[in-house]
Length: 456
Image 1 (tube, helix red, strand yellow):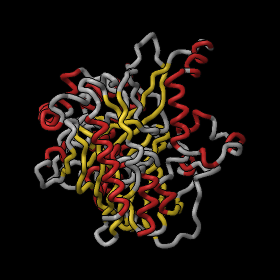
Image 2 (cartoon, helix red, strand yellow):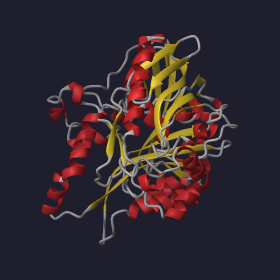
Image 3 (cartoon, one colour):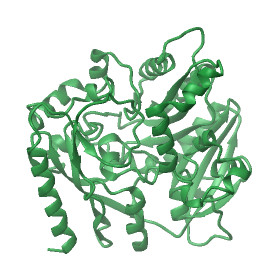
Image 4 (cartoon, one colour):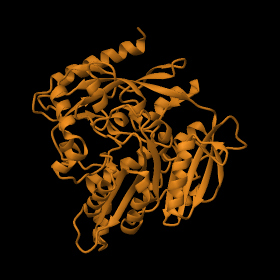
């Protein structure tokens, strides 16, 4: 047995004992220093499980193209372990501090998702501390296959990922980017669909697809291709700002690592709220602080103490609603959602990314997408004014209704407003209840509605 594996087993046993010692009826939460959730939480006296030791890659198998990874391992550390072998995870979410276990239980998407689906579709095996205190290993072909197919989108309400085995894919040293501008949203989504189906554009292979919308007639499709050489590479980890380059350059080259983290330096474009896109300010900020977890700490301070909200009220400005969402809409209805969004929700830029289920025969019970369809993820993260005394949540509720009408799905990492019956209709209440009975019969953990809607 390797020392890393032996140390993991020791930490796993300590965690199991810690969980067993928590009295029944006491709320439980993971004790961790980072989060990428945007849900307000009720204050509680929850017992916190110390999962700080479950971080790190246990093994990389270059021949099998797999990695064995602890659940709290960040994608930053995972990528650092796989790239020296010329490999990367099949889907790498955009932010460095997202953990593998978090992305699997809470979903994860990126520009390879038109080929590889969502993060959980590349998992081969998952070891879970279940809500009933058992440690179980779930695979698609064993007695815990129901947990394997139901763990994605369960958000830690069935148990916690301790260890995962995932597939990897080969990389080349660089990624060539082509930023293609569109002025018509019909052409935009039609081209996105065609490129995804053919994995090529203008005679060149395409390995990555995502897009950025700056306005109704100002859209960019970014097509990435692995290449062995680059005439020069750009660096967007310092003064350069990646999203601004989309409107200025038609072709760009990045190292693979810089491509994977191209969005992290400025948290897509959200860093502008903190003033660090001003060149005079940016020169004064240490480069190591230009990353998503730095901005997240500022958001957490605002959420806890509200200094900016109080200042806005003192200035007499209208209240604003946080609209932070990722939704998936079938690509044939993407133009309809686009029209609704640019007409009713004053947020720009916003992100778009095509995805398709990787294995048409696979079953993902709590976030079922039609395997015959391509979907478009719309990601938008900002605030909008609340006019005429409208209540907080007005815009979010409207988005939820439109997404449902268009046959889409909404990710649950942020605030949700569904009524209980509607929620369970959308997220497969019968399947979830069976999983809860099988792995958390005494309801030691919150259920999915309590956690994701009632802000548990």
